[in-house]
Amino acid sequence: MSLGRTHAVALVGLQGAVIEVEAQLAQGLPAFRIVGLPDVSLGEARERVRAAVSSCDVAFPMKRLTVGLTPAELPKAGSAFDLAIAVAVLAADGKIRGERAVERVHLGELGLDGRVHPVRGVLPAVAAAVAAGRCAVVVPVGNESEARLVPGAEVTAVAHLAELAMAYGAQIKPQALDRIAEPAIPPQRRTAATEPLDLSDVLGQEQARLALEIAAAGGHHLLLHGPPGTGKTMLAARLPGLLPDLSEAEAVEVTSVHSVAGTFEAGNGLVRRPPFEDPHHTATPASVVGGGSGLPRPGAASRAHRGVLFLDEAPEFSPRVLETLRQPLEQGELVLHRARGTARYPARFQLVLAANPCPCGRASGKGVDCVCTPIARRRYLSRLSGPLLDRIDIRVEVPELRAGALRAAPAGESSAVVAARVGTARQAAAERLRSTPWYVNGEVPGPWLRDHTHRVEPRLTGQLDQLRDTGRLTLRGVDRVLKIAWTVSDLAGRDAPNLGDLAAAVTLRAGGGRG
Picture 1 (cartoon, rainbow, N blue to C red):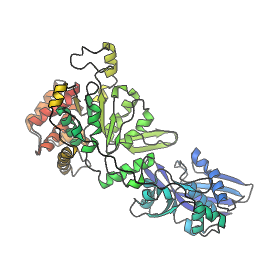
Picture 2: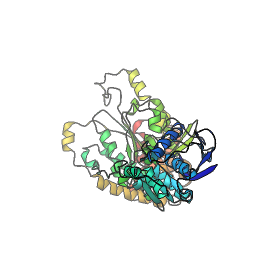
Picture 3: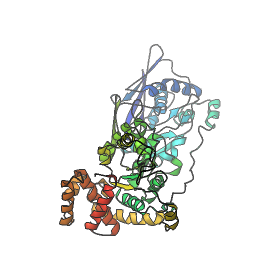
Picture 4: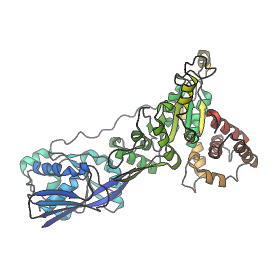
């Protein structure tokens, strides 16, 4: 009986755990088993590993082979274990020097011809390995640039299993060495950056532009409602251009999410700009909040972490999709429970909803052109439930402008000018919240906000109490109004909000009705 060992990493959400991979050869009828709670794709590694080893012109051991993944109670999914399993098998069979293999963490999927293909989630996997004290990692060539983003990682990139086996002391035949020179995958290239959309493209709509600036400065959720063609989508698409660059910690977290989701292009380095996700209204709950068989993958809500999630034609979305957003709006993360385990993904995004006043979109103003029945209008708007709307800080109407008003509208400020004010306001909020885990006003929970109102004028708190008692605002609405007032104050450079800031906040909050 002989034993070979090495290591891999199992990801559950963004959390990685170093896994010990053991391969044992024993006398008996030839068999190949993988134990340790593997999923279907990991179970299929038996055939991939067998074919890849044979493609290196190395005889696969014709014995009873058992591969154990420890700890056994942790779910393990995906094909990233292939390379580690193959290395453990070769070490158990004495084809390579096991003392070198056991020191490293191996990540990669094997092709039947022995090529090592890139896998998802390399960034958080390598980060987990380094955090566990195992800095030496072996990854596919296609994931090399991504793995090198992790500080402290000692990265070795391989294109073919024979290349790695030879580095570990295996005797490889010349014909197998010829295959190493074959390109495994095209190298990851740096994609050209697209020109950011500029706010100066939006004509008129001064109130909506102001609401967008306040939303950007305070990290507030936003509802834009009005007839079609008034600029709701244009405004929403320009919100990311008003947001500051991500901090180093935020960039690593956002990049890890996109790495697990398979949407990360390592050639561009860490994701430094706030992401923008705009799923179609036919999207399913799993595609928006995350899901899939086995352990769930991140959806659009997590991919929009530290950025913007835009739902155009929001009432056309399934109510199930809209209601699933209530958890991340409150907690800033998504907890997805499945039979094989629970995955947590960060989801602290700015939600922007755009909605028409009715199915035909012509019910604004006097609504004389609207062809919808009262029941159709009621059914359409009721898809945005009260609990969901209560979590939307700012609600603003985007009215239809006449041709003369558009021609007379002055040129609006550019995104760069507005972004400078947003950055200054965010710095003021960050300084005020420096002893807390929050960075922007929109993240501050209501209890903390109410306990730290000593800098707010008593008349202002009295006005809020009156709005609450008369039913114009819910308790959550009072908190949202106070957050908006602080943001308006930060933009104006004041130390605390005054009655004018409160009035502006109430107007922005009540733009969509009862708050």
